[in-house]
Length: 459
Ligand SMILES: Cc1ncc(COP(=O)(O)O)c(C=O)c1O
Figure 1 (cartoon, rainbow, N blue to C red):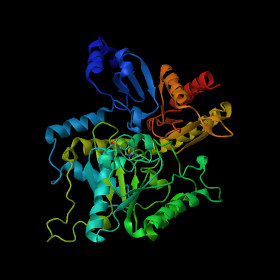
Figure 2: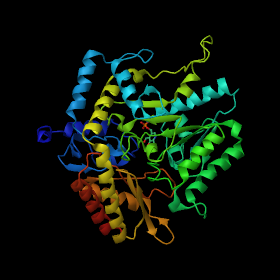
Figure 3: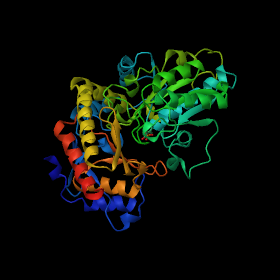
Figure 4: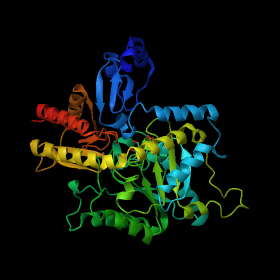
């Protein structure tokens, strides 16, 4: 294997990392006495680190990103060829990959017609917030400027998107935040907030209550993940989405679906919202859009929204006055074109549905064997297992124990994830998001490792 050739002596690389790299989401004190993990190579669903250890990656690059798997030469070649032809021009002009990918993307999203390029999920979401504010300023006389967001959802790392963080531990210590972002309750039925017949409709009605409290005339949009990711893999209860859509229409509130995680196949459809018959006004996407082969994000919207930015050409301030420098890089859309082709030609949506069913069946079997699993949920290759100290009371398992289970799987050579310093007292969900190319054997290896870790650490 090629990876063995690259492993001659990487001790200098590891030392350089230890001395100079500031890792994301990491407390660095332990690296004063231990080496950080440095990954060297990936193939399909497998990774090798600088010590030559092999891992099966059940989280697609840690944060549900590498949807088509590692080592895709066809994407690398497409990017290389494009970089030689034209690597960049600012987004005020067009480029061939930008135009071609926009057309292909829109073909997967009936009802939407325009694509705005930038380069991270946070940025794609910020674009919507700016559009909503500009629509409020120009078309609603300054009203409808507030944006609703939901408890337990996450939309990014910038100050603006952190203002819409439904995960308090992510936003903590970085405030104060800008005004006009208002929280609505989460819809996780396992952690019930209402005891009623149709839980989904009741959870959606809670959004209406917030709208009425704030004043419908002040609310311009609502941002929601189709399936909440880092907040604990929350699939919406039956009845939730139709009612949310109804409420948005009733109060003329734009519906912004954050597909940064669910987009491009993760749930077995091109977009997560397409599982629920939703008609969004904005859709944002990043991560799996080019599977991490290039940085790209998109904000897609309708012609109706787009029209609001060109209605007054005589006014020099009437258009969307925004730029993202690297939104003009051609590597992103050209990688995204090839990424989409792979998903289509290799039948990866169907594989995601089939392997997702296997993963869910395996998790349900684990739940029968381990009382520490209180709930399993998911859609496609996007699953979670919520761990509890007591099934009857649903007391969450201590975060350190959850992390010990993740570490044990890692020691077995299987990388899984968990909710991490996001929700005070509720960082207790194991997260799985293998690449869409996963085989039955991969799925079984992942859940076998979890089985052993749970037996060892949680009885
Ligand atoms: C649902 C969701 N939206 C937005 C983001 C932010 O994306 P990025 O890290 O690319 O800015 C994330 C990142 O994890 C996410 O999970």
